[in-house]
Length: 502
Image (tube, rainbow, N blue to C red; front, side, top):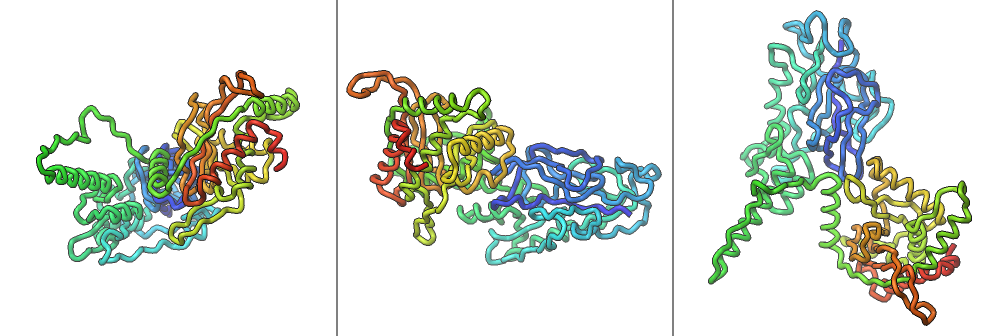
């Protein structure tokens, strides 16, 4: 007797509540092995291949490529333990994929009951995972109601023979409605519940509930665009925009002696609308939060990098043609930053706004901005204060390659304490960087180029670079920030200064 097991989108860690399906790695009817990757998803942190903890035949997939799914939503169903006469494609030669009429459906086994389950304990699912609990409904807080759809709440039935279902649909008995289908409306009603007698509030994502609560949006008045009327973030965003436009129009109309201007339609037929989601959405949220919460200030200085470039050339020449990887300018600047943070630890900190405390961090985990095809990411070099230039350079090269191929894990993109941004690679001289929240500072580096410079009392052509430091004014004053930037500039102009800290 085959059992149909439902595999749900697991908790991918780092507080992520949803993921976008980038590419399906299996088709309906494919035979999958235990822990075989079945789908590639993109979160706000990274691209992740999700393995399935079951081995068997894929009977259904949920969600098209490009769609977003909340954590806990069904991904696919797998028939485990194919019955006699079932070929690997999932079709029964005798019944053409339909069970005999009158066969009673039985509840499917859970993930922990599956004999073909994964031996790995993965985040949110796998062998030994506790049974999922239904969160209670709070009638006093309709915006915080937890909902599960009928697909995830209704048990998937067993059948003696299975046929591959169409992509995005669950398997059903031919010609008759299954018990799961008949119970679907009731399951939704029980899972959703009634709020103050006004009907259900179908919301799954905690992010959506919080966003609605922050903008005073009544979820009971929204019509969800998701399956079974599920309210998605796009629905809440649309309600927020509509409320803001209404408020703006009302303010203009109330102003005396002024004629309201015709509002520009946000849905112009020739306008291109690009969803802020995935990496782009995460960057937008973080930068907006940084500008909102951090009172930042920027100072900058021009530095003569001629001696630094000469020192780099000497290091690379000493290594010989086969003496290992070349030392990069970014690696030298990263080591200089680690030394400067040891002298000015105020900038290697964060602010606990709830406790009204400045938290100075013991180690330097140095992030560096990397532009990829998927957008801007900031990989983190762990314990940069304990590494030499060669070690930092090797780690930067490794993380950069992972960033370009989209294989950085969430852990490699979080936990930074200071960020180095080399925007000089784009051919620009200067910038005012936005701090990578919740850090306290970021050093920006412009392009290194020949310029006229007064050197030893004479005008000469030197390699000049502009350095800019954006810092959180809550953690230090301008004197500390200026001292940090001046020390970095001194190390750039005279690399021998750095030898005292190595």
